[in-house]
Length: 248
Image 1: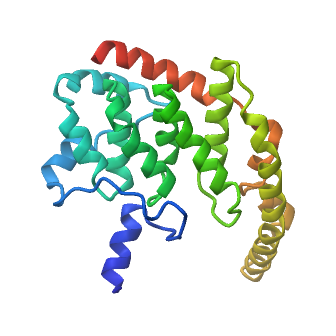
Image 2 (image 1 turned 180 degrees about the vertical axis):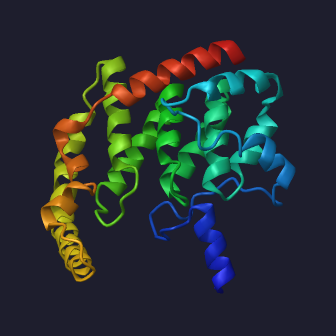
C-alpha cells in the first residue's frame, strides 16, 4: 500500500486497522464513489454538527430537508467508506425511522472500520429499541471489552446497554462490569508507560508535565465505573424522538 492510499484511509477514518471475529460479515458498500456534489449536500453540512449541544441549529437544518431524505440517500451515505458519510447516514436512518437498516448499522458498529462514528451507531441502535438492535450492542461488548489495546466505543456502548436496562427494567449492564474492570486494569500499565515516555520527551523540550497530569488527560479517568451514565442517551434520544415525529 503506497503513501497516498494510506493517507486516503486515514482521512476516511481507518486510523486503526485490526482483525476481529466480525471481519467476514458482509458489509454494505457502494459500487462507486459518491460525487462531490452529493457529499457537499448530504454530509458536509451535518457530520460535525449532529448531536452537538453547543449549537442546535443542525436540528432545524435537518427539518428543512427532511422531505428529501430517502432510503436511497441513507444507503448511499452508509455505503461510503468514510466516517463522515456513515455518521450522517446512520443518524438520518433514525430520523426517518428506517429500521430496515439496523443490520447495516449494527454490522458497521461490530466491524468498526472507521473512527469517530461508533457513538452514533450506538445511539441509532438504541433509538430503534428492537431486540435486533440491542443484540448488536451485546455482541460488540462481548468482543471489544476483551481488546484493551483498542480504544474504540466501549464506554458509549456500555452506556447504551445501561440505557436499555433503564427503559426495559433489565439488568444486562451488570453482566459486563467484570470484563470492563479487567479491561481497565490491562490498560493501566501501557497508559502509564506511554505517559512516562511523553513526560520525559516534553521535559527535554522545556515543558514540565508530570506523569499523573498526563494520565488525567487521557482516557484513564473515563475508565472509572462510577462515571457511567445514561445522560447522553437521555438527551439524544429525546432529540431523535422529536425529529422522528416531525420527519416521518
